[in-house]
Length: 412
Image 1 (cartoon, rainbow, N blue to C red):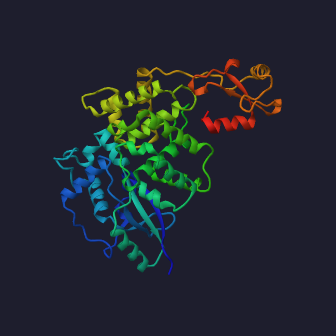
Image 2: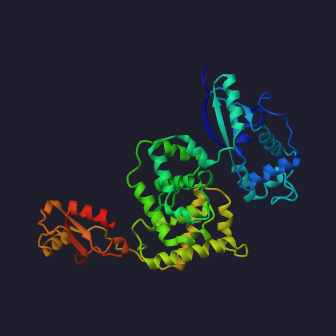
Image 3: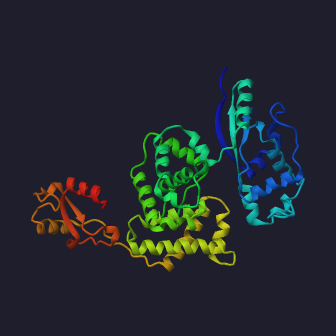
């Protein structure tokens, strides 16, 4: 017997609406009839508007390659409730956070409507396979809890370079000091998103990647054999910086995955060499800024940019929302913390190199042996990121090998 192929898909509510309920066939062999009461249906819709997970659907693709059609193995009550709400059969509960709203009413509430129509509904898609196998898969799925994004990623591949690195990053000491627990591979999901923003962010033009499950799983596939150059070092550098800057007090204010992603992005931008940040003064100032910012966002009496950030925080991890949140945090950081720019001239000029070589009498600073000009490297005595200028007085002559060894030993 042939086993069914299993794949995964995120439907938005808008996609379900466009497909229509006729594209979903309810199989009574696996599903109960419609048994949910109005109260349960209302709670489901409110969960979608509030961006809470509603678990995974299990669908069997019985359509052709051109027209999608799915047999519903698990999720009948949820799908039926969604389609009934879209049709206008019931309103949200009067006691909910989105009281007494039909789908037609919801359209006039731009923020809530946007959340609802874009809300993701995760589905496990089965293709092919014998009926006995389909029934067995359904039974096994019912014995467990629906997978969240982190668990889907963890199950997506049992090995691979990207997966292994994500697991290593998630064991960094920084994660021991935050209030986001590690249950259900939460920390691994966070690190996978860190990797994706490192690979897909263009800070110069303020462009950020999508962070959907499909984008994360694609990243795992593309980098299964090897990591992109410098990715591991960059993620570790930022985790080290966060650990040193926020310390054990991080558990008092790092409680939200969305906030942590934005803080990571801020650090990634700062640590790219344009600013001097690796010193105790800045780390202390950064902790103060982070603590105050998150406190102000949590204070509903705070209006203006903090209210705007609160609203954006509830709208998901789209590139547009990430960019708007980043701008808010960067503008506030720039106003509250004195940022020192590093020397724009990162590399020594040929004239500077010649002067450094002459002043050193051609002798390597590290091993104190003669250096052939073709094997010469020129090192910043005071680290470039710590405002070390690119000038003759800050230059040291070294062999290429000695220069590499110096960086391995001291980190700069």
